Length: 154
Image (cartoon, rainbow, N blue to C red):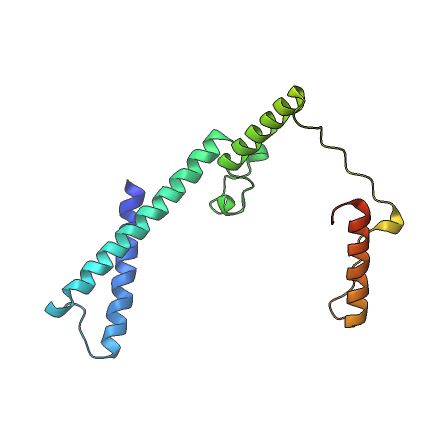
């Protein structure tokens, strides 16, 4: 709750300073009686933004406590922005894998075949974007031909 009030105070001061500065350029006063609605808007915006920021920070902190990262990763303030999968995504992958395993055991689904190793001569055909249109179209045609051979395209 302290984080919310601190963010609210900072954001409200920042919002009011920006609004007062902009209005002073045009000769208006932010604290004139006609501007009460603008003050209310600034108050509500600062409250909403500080609430959202505090909830996001609390959620990241809770996620870090639930699933600690190896070697202390995730302890910095910005680490949550660059984290991997969310807890919901991890749970969904686990459910899908369990369901797949159950269907394979029941015989309703075939085991996924291992991907075939790519030989050296059959690597993806790519050309630079700065290559001529003729070269790019030839590379694309080769990729389509290979995809049809492997059954990826009809």
